[in-house]
Image (cartoon, rainbow, N blue to C red; front, side, top):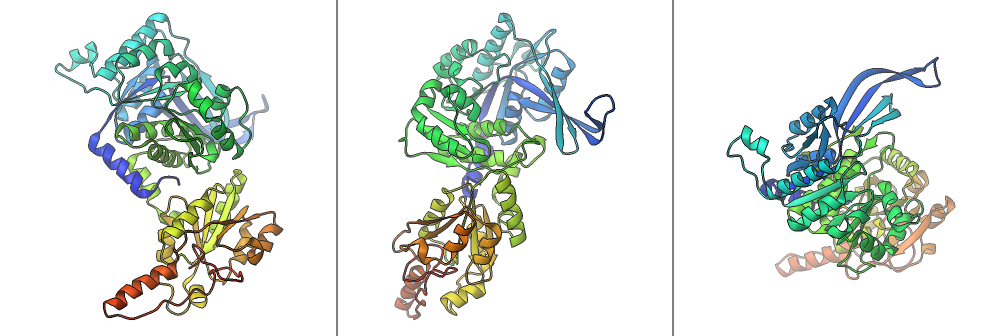
Length: 537
């Protein structure tokens, strides 16, 4: 999770209150999923026989972006070319049912509406069959440009006015362009948006260089599209982020964008901003998903970022909001939609973050199979303060999945004295689970986390303080399975004992006495020597 609960709720509330008008212009697709059981192989060919149990048709491509924007609370107008075929009629019906305004759709006589049909046998996509629309004529492109201008200005098409006299529409707040090389022509659309530009313009395109003259406020290339823009490979896995950061100026120059957020699938995103320094880079982390089933998460990401920007959300917060929305849909099979309620529920559910040791082991195994780097730290975290949050944020930046192991109440008493903990393990776990930088929280009963470390074998073990890894008994265990021990800085004068002491001294000044027991050393670890360690006091 990359967006905190308060931020997500604030954006959702602002969208609900403002109901921004978002125009989505682009290449629409009908995604059809034919699902069934694959229990045998055909005698005619080495192919599975799928016994169909269900067929699902949902908006895809730019239409999926529109549906997601509507589900998050925006008023959405869809501008696109579709055929007058059955696929086009189904797509329009699905958009109407989702609450998307389809009055600016342009139906082209005799044209084909793009459809992508996935055959799913069991839990696996067996084959995908694409029926693609032909390239539009110059006349059709001109009609699309006219429809775009009308949708942005809030001009209701003549046929819609005739059907509902007196019907009016507001100007658009945001335009989202979705160009998937299926017919949207930048040379026709860019001049329209230059003449009547809304407050925010977002572009999601396979080739963003075609839209550079528009100087979008945000572009959302994926890793492959970014590599194409740069003319070179980004590398593999998490290493791609460093390549993207190094290419910041080049990406912004070739796209003409004010901001570019590069999506790196399981490795989250990297936001490149023209207004910030090359070293001040905002990143988000993603929830891993099965590539067999996940589809359309990029559309959801683009929609959520656009809706957030439409209500004036700062770009960093908008990108984190979009990552949280994408994390919702990657958990679902097929082309899915993230609603405002589902998004708020997702980031408000610490119970899914607080896990027992078996659940933790399963989650770590799944993350490791997805190529994610596991970071582990531990402590009491009795009264969470700035030292803790700084330390945990630094730890989270060392990998893809941050696990925080929490001393239970009995082990805290053994380590800190009978007056501790101040807060129960359940309360402490709930607080940590609500932090955006923390992915999983678990509670352990032993004086050190060594048994848990031996079980989950983290890639990185993180502790804070002014001592070396050699002073920690955990170091030998971590390194034995190829892990790395990293010491991070702590915020001076920020420890739980110091906080408790100040509270009690203040109370003593009002007629109450009491002293906090001194730190006995980093809780949950076995180092020698004095140190104030975030997370341990």
